[in-house]
Image (tube, rainbow, N blue to C red; front, side, top):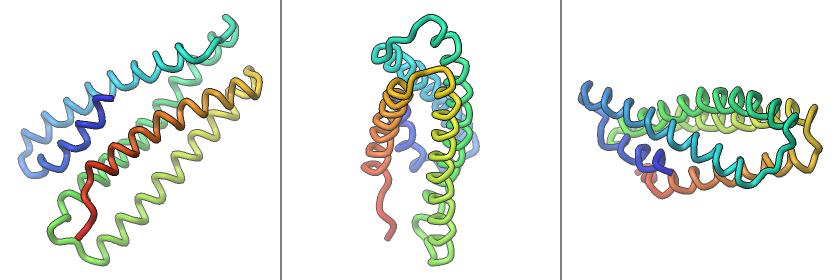
Length: 153
């Protein structure tokens, strides 16, 4: 997933405005590519009937839009962490942790709302499989982020 390498680059481009703009463009392209990859993985692992697919994909696109908005919050948190890395205070650390927990909780709320929405037209086992796939993809991103973002001092 190309978006993972972009997150790592965030830590190196925190001061110059032009670099930030270029970084934002790279992130947007990486996200677009990652979203297409995610959709392809779902398509390869799910067998939807025609009527299920007709309802699923619009619901999934709305879910991904909500996830992207929450992902923007995570990107901002990573930028904030990077900008404060050298001069981290206890107050800033607490602020960052509070924001992080809020973002993770919102991820679960978004995913739960999506599961409830698709449960209306998909059997529970298919809903579970979709959520499992989404969880695995999210875990891969989280693992990459954890390996790229340094521990606070």
